[in-house]
Image 1 (cartoon, rainbow, N blue to C red):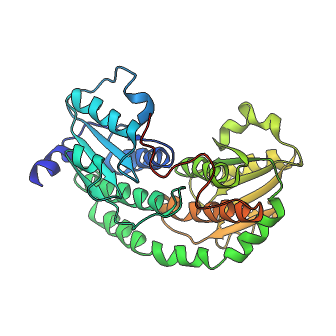
Image 2 (cartoon, rainbow, N blue to C red):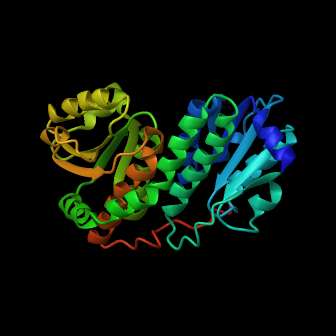
Length: 326
């Protein structure tokens, strides 16, 4: 354990490896590690990593993220990273899995079996682990004791706040029924909620078979805005953080073009209702923890759209729980 702590504390650069939902969790991890620990971080698709010539210098630490611990692309990327001399840590859910055996150390999520093919609780568990790691590394670098306590207390409150979101599922189902026949969705977020937008779009594609794309909200005007019309629902994540006013401006751009605006907003934000077609509220939390809350209504939205379209939410077509081939 001492050797692991030393490696992490001396890290000069972090690389996150993952596929699909795990890659999205890595994107959140990138924000967290840079914000809390001040460590340059990057996220790589595991499926592409081994086919590049990765530059791994002394002080580079690699985190491999996988729910199953058996993802073939991630295993191949781990071997490539180790071949270049990097210490590799695993973040996976299945005890005794291949990734757990082939990494130098790591963390088990202990989220319990995830029955459905599309990852949900694994995603929030991965973010939780990444947050705790970033905070641990940050405490020895740039996060003071007071701020550290604030973040720990905020994390402890997350389960009860998720329970409050789950209690609003009837409202989410109503919205899902309203948009179940839409053929295209756009998901937009900024900062830490950009990866959540990507994850929301992926969930809709996976279990509802509806085309959806996620983008940073500011990138909408660099192309995707051409798609917006009255038949295009646009899902915004607009919680109270440093990008809130910018996201409001993006919402106005969609409204001006007749788009249907669905907003994930912070409880108590009555102003946002004047700009949105639909609003789903999440409790307020520290901005660094918002992905743990904002992803829940997006997961439920996909779930209910899938049900109303007659799709099998646990066994989507063409997908497997563990992708064990390249």
